[in-house]
Image 1: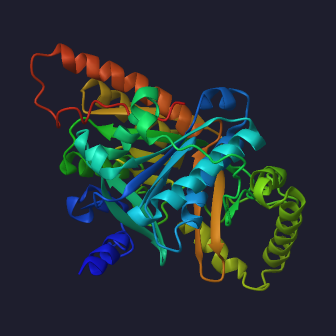
Image 2: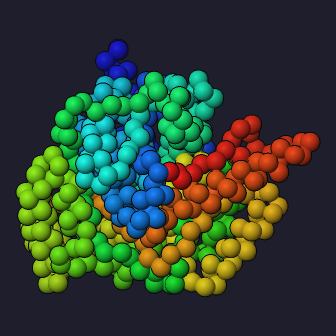
Length: 422
């Protein structure tokens, strides 16, 4: 009986039902509480804004994606919930994987330091401790394509974990420390070969958005408003506002990110070994796409269609995190809506606008169509949007605190800053 319970807990996320329309993030029936025995592994780049100011946007994204890759590679092929935040990432693991996956994540800290000169905060926070601290961690599963899912989170657990991670005193019991000289972390599948994705409509908008009322109805209303503002072009499977489409994908040989990929993966496996293999794979990809013919397991037309579907440009962890390609009218309508919603104390937001998006990939099997692609606005999209969000959230909380009674939302939930501002 204990074995059955342990097996059920291990497969909790893998067995979770999926939903296929993004509007499902507002349906409380989509979510299930993560078991108390699970552990949330968290990573965040220290002073990421300095790295962004130096123009190292793609390197920051690469290290954040490496945190996810390390945990997934250590997961023994068990499907796990994770979220990519541009300059950080989180993934939840069952208890029997916590030590191995935690050590793999600690290894990414070594890689970040040795290959990019970046300091990475890493911690393993038990879900039960998040609940004792007053938050919850519930998870839902959005299906991008068959076999490729994105986790959505609610309950305040992700924001609580970010707060703990950045507080030296609170994170002390959970901090992960790498073993001396241990850089054996496996990052199989991590790649960085697409060129920046241009804004076909004019503006790549990286947006963090949260209703002040934390009810599912308020979130559903927000998604409905976004759909209306973007001319019914937001919540569909691959809407026109999606930043990655077949027409916007850019690839060149050799890829501009090839050396970055080789440095990141090569610390454990050897720089030249990684570089030669990545160069060969990039050349094969170019031949297959140019000739539009299958080469080995790669069917270019199918793969490119899957890339478009398997991007994380829409996600939710109590805050909507979006990367959208908007035209002038759509951007103007959105900004007017956001300003009015903020003035009416209905929502809090943070935004960054650029001319292109960046994409970092986890490709575990082209033949089995198992791959997901992380999208961030160029110029530090999510990090800069998070900084804007934090400023606005703090101002909103001060306004609400000055009122005798607001009656909105849940205590300590809607006013909490949710950024990853380094």
